[in-house]
Amino acid sequence: MKSLIEIGIALVALIIIIFIARRIILSWQFGKYVSKLFSNSENISGKVFTYDQLSNLPAPVQRYFKHVLNDGQPYISYVRLTHDGQFKADLKKDWTPIKGEEYFTTAQPGFIWKGKTSLFTALDMYIAKKGRLAVFLLSLFKIVDSHGDKYNQGELLRWLGECVWFPTSLLPGEFLEWQAINDTSAKLLYKYNNMSLVYTVRFNDKDEIEQLETERYMGEGGLQKWIVKCANYKKRNGMFIPTTAEVLWRLKDWDFSYAKFNVKKLEYNRPEIF
Image (tube, rainbow, N blue to C red):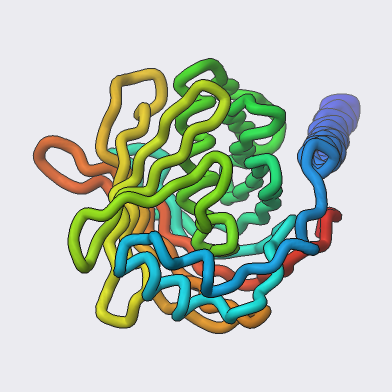
């Protein structure tokens, strides 16, 4: 009996050691990804925004930039943030609490996000022009590792939609342009790495972006309408940015909301891990 107890204790200790070691390895890998992300971009904070850049833009887009940016605002080069919120893993799952951290580059579009729930850790990224989604059950077992053309498109779309947190990246440039629709919405076009992305952007009566809608590949499936809703704008580093976001798929019969994030910490031009 004593030997069985000892074996049981040893097995439990071994499982705990493996679990701790796997979490350490995953954290180390994440740090390597963050370093690679920042090394692929550059500092553009010497570039300055002026209202003169807005003269040819659609009216609601002009009002948005005049509201969220100051004349003379330096361009943002790097971003890091933390958030909490709720997440649904699929259509049949209930909401579960989630915490995450995310890092962005702007001169070259890129990001990496780590989201953690009680059951899984997810890494979502667009680094060196490649998109990838990896999910680890209990930080031990890799249950998803998806990449390829559909993920290149989807992750670049995520980066572009999240530029509302660093709005100098939504200004017209080499890859980005705006086209008029009406007085409350406009088309956002982004051409990069042989991809052409399009968002329909809707503005509210406060001249804030309240919704971005596009078509994104739903996993390995076909294109579906994908929507980001923004709210609760607050002033950060001289800019007005949303502090809450809801993400959903607009399916044939209903809207599948799967992420609700609340920004907790947001820092600019610190290309280092938390």
